[in-house]
Amino acid sequence: GAGVSQSPSNKVTEKGKDVELRCDPISGHTALYWYRQRLGQGLEFLIYFQGNSAPDKSGLPSDRFSAERTGESVSTLTIQRTQQEDSAVYLCASSLSGAVKYEQYFGPGTRLTVT
Amino acid sequence: SQQGEEDPQALSIQEGENATMNCSYKTSINNLQWYRQNSGRGLVHLILIRSNEREKHSGRLRVTLDTSKKSSSLLITASRAADTASYFCATDPTGTASKLTFGTGTRLQVTL
Image 1 (cartoon, each protein chain N blue to C red):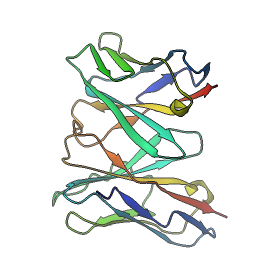
Image 2 (cartoon, helix red, strand yellow; image 1 turned 90 degrees about the vertical axis):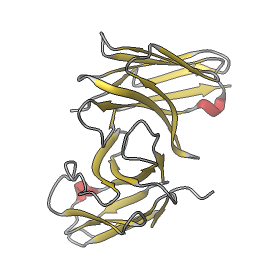
Image 3 (spheres, chains in turn red, brown; image 1 turned 90 degrees about the horizontal axis):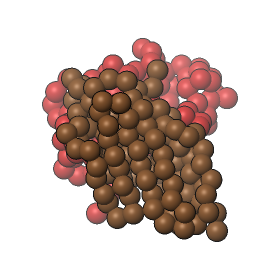
Image 4 (cartoon, chains in turn purple, yellow; image 1 turned 120 degrees about the vertical axis):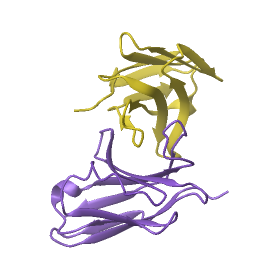
């Protein structure tokens, strides 16, 4: 079946502009995660959604970052007033349950470049 | 700081050789997972080992976990060129049932 999809695959934006990244999780997966990966680095947790529970926003680096999820489907990550340090690959993952004993399935990522 | 740190940062071997990567972490965990990332398939889950397990196998992969030393190792036997990728360990710290903490990764290069 279809995996996790993300759009756009690449985004180049000017410093100060807002960007919106989209993630479509695997159907039936109740948990959704956003990560950031800078060049040559590991993954940095940003935010986690589980069903109708309040999201875990503990990884968001600043108030310029926000995310929403519609029910148990699409999620959008918004970065306002982008800065050059926001340049990274943003990865979305979904899993069957919020319990991390279930493996996470990752999308291909959105490569964001802030000029 | 990263919960998990892989060692070595980079590893180059020839096809057919075994590759061993290590992961150290700082806090107690529920489980530890290994993921592979390459340009072709993105980030893919390889294997999960629970805190009460010491060793686990999956095909050519062997994972060990030593909770007393807070460390894990991933062994890939009879490596292939297709194993070329970055390998990350990810821990599920106890008390944080919602998120994985990833290490910085080991870049494995398998040459013919």
